[in-house]
Amino acid sequence: MTTPHVLMGLLAAGPRHGYDLKRAHDERLPRAKPLAYGQVYATLGRLVRDGLVEQHGQDREGGPDRTSYALTETGRARLTEWLTTVEPPAPYVTSALFAKVMICLLAADPATTADYVAAQRAAHAARIRELTVIKRNRASPVADVVAADYAIGHLDADLRWLQTTLLRVSELHREVNA
Image 1 (cartoon, rainbow, N blue to C red):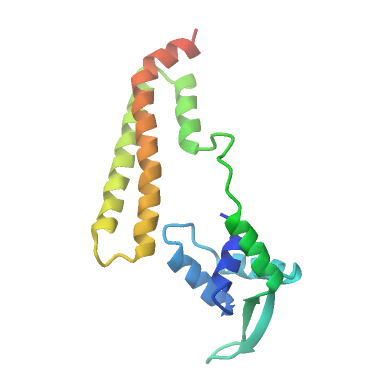
Image 2: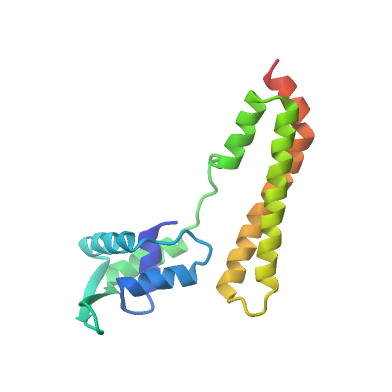
């Protein structure tokens, strides 16, 4: 995720304070890694410096002064460019799960690898069940359901890969240790 683009996207609807941006991020991108307030304000500072966002005003609502920020025309153009650029598929596998399974294949005996893969499959299946509860709950916000769909798709792909790997453990150990 690119934090500057996400914050610009949240500003596309109108000016907001840093606190409101953080809250909107956490609400609108459920299940994403939450942003720290410091990260929001540091990113806003860079966006202002780069002319993509501008300070829009200040107010005091029973507390310290709060600066609101607005997207500039340049920022709006940059956001549109980002939103219309297709993300290339990742050229490399960069998953902790993939690395761990491959190292397990290199460093462990077939039974240990098979046990690990089976335990990982069980953890993935349990997470899919948790996410399915969110999807079935009629009170779940649409953003939560969309995030659950995304996560389930990835977990399901991992499960299929783990199943295939489990079937190949003995063959892979022979090949690696030959």
